[in-house]
Length: 59
Image (cartoon, rainbow, N blue to C red; front, side, top):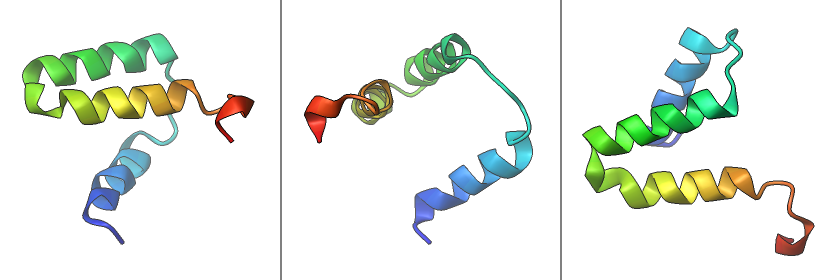
């Protein structure tokens, strides 16, 4: 298990039954980056990756 998996596992166990909108998620990511600007690039990469998951051109 990677170190980062602990946070992912916590998220799944604490909030795994909830449904959220992508607008809500985007707002949470913005807030996180505002509070933690050193994570701007990784959050941007994650958001771009999530946005393009279904793009057939990237395969």
